[in-house]
Amino acid sequence: MNMRWDLDVLYTSFDSPECKQDWEELCDKIEALKQWAVENLQNTDDAVEKMEQYITQLTAILQKEYRLFSYAELTASVDAKNEKALQLSERIQDQAVEKVEPEVLFQKWLGTLSNLDELISQSGLLEEHRYFLQEIAEESKYMLSEKEEIILAKMKNTGSNAWTKLQEMLTSTLLVDITIDGEQKQLPLPVVRNMAFEKDADVRKQAYEAELASYKKIEESSAAALNGIKGEVITISKLRGYESALDKTLKDSRMDQETLDAMLTAMRESLPAFQRYFRKKAELLGHQSGLPFYDLFAPVGDADMRFTYQEARDFIVKHFSSFSQKLSDYAAKAFDNRWIDAEIREGKRGGAFCDNLHVVKESRIMANFTGSYSDVSTLGHELGHGYHGDCLVDEAFLNSDYPMPIAETASILCETIIANAALKEASSEEAFSILENDISGAAQVIVDIYSRFLFESELFARRENGSLSVKELNEIMLQAQKDAYGDGLDQSVLHPYMWVCKPHYYSADYNYYNFPYAFGLLFAKGLYAEYLKKGEAFVQQYDELLSVTGKKSVADVAAIMDVDVRSIDFWRNSLSLIEKDIETFISLADAR
Image 1 (cartoon, rainbow, N blue to C red):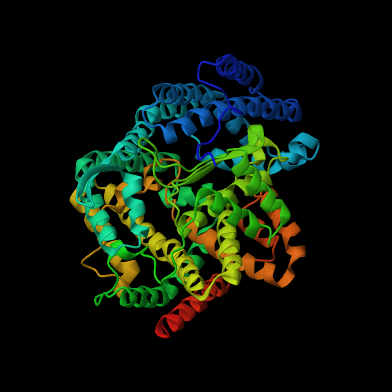
Image 2: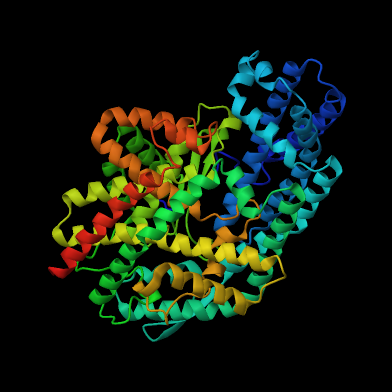
């Protein structure tokens, strides 16, 4: 199978007539919106008609902008030095600043409408966009003046956006010096990081040591990027009147502090169970002082679960059908129509992501596939994101953007489907490996994510007083890992540079991009438990839940399934499912 995606549905090239025409139309539409806003938002006469006109014009602009930007960003994600992609991306970001003036004018104007709910009820188009309008009206109190907003938007392109691009370039082009079978090589960072899943213990350790050594080449630049981005976030959050960067993130996530506190409390309570798992895995691998970081993802058991890309495709499509035919058909379409780029190559960024292209009713998935079961699970995860997007294709464009915590629900539910379905037909050795891989993934989402939350909280606290050195960043990361992993890990063999290789830290728009993963895992676990009870009736309800995630708060989305996310018991119940798996794993390990 072809392991590179096809982007022709967007544009055939950066020089294509369609790409050039869309760019020109984007510029024209933004200019027209600017003129319309100045002429029409001086008073509240004909408010319903003005709101309708704004939504229509903004949607047309955002669809053009998203199509162009997605093409540029998707191209650059697999070809970091593609000059035309980088240039178009930068031009779009510069041009997007021109939207700020009409957006600010409209948002401030909307905030003056005392009877907004009544006005919305007078129009079908406005009713469809009720949540969008109510949300931006509420956010209007955090807006600065029109002039200040434009300045901030322009400065961001030469500030945090530039730092983000630098970090992406550094990690995408970093070559790691490593000796393989006696031969000195230079390999892309994602290739070396993926060696953490290798069967050979010496390879895992050698890859870990080579990886850490390679960060010396980019540590100072990465620290500068991180300090620049977080410094900007702190400054702007204060200017707007948010209590903190976390306060802004929660509001952007349509989630409240009470929900976050309930979830974090349950997560802290579960750490001892995960630490027992780490110690047992260490014992299986012959370690006496806890698990060294380089063996976190080491395969255990004698099963050699390797997959070709075709086998991975068939495995996922088959097991998705145990949940619903619609999900299975979506996955088959994604593989067969080349919506996935899974080949590892130089210049391609590490990790995996999914970009839902609402404008063409498709999605694109980037992964780095080496053939491990973990890679299959990752593909299942990203296809879950894609399926979420598929459930939103008939929604209005402005209702297709959902908050971060809900974003991980469909993806992690798909991981759970894969693991549980695979267990039913696996041999005892394969079942042991699948169970361990599933727990390992959960440990990353609960324990490692908790360490990242601790790291980012401390980073923001210290950044208030000035830039942090590489030494300080390493120390904070090590302490966060010690606090989260406890004696489950060998505390002399941790990963001080985890702040360098995780791109989530390097976005001014998505701070604390860690706890949403925990939310997604635990929410999905709870939903899967409901699926086991309800069967087919659950699937239709689940698809409905995904379809409204762009126009409801997190709590209201969860309420569709009769879930109270502010209740600590909900999170405890979800974690108890993982804790049972851990006890099963320990029992099976002891019996070996």
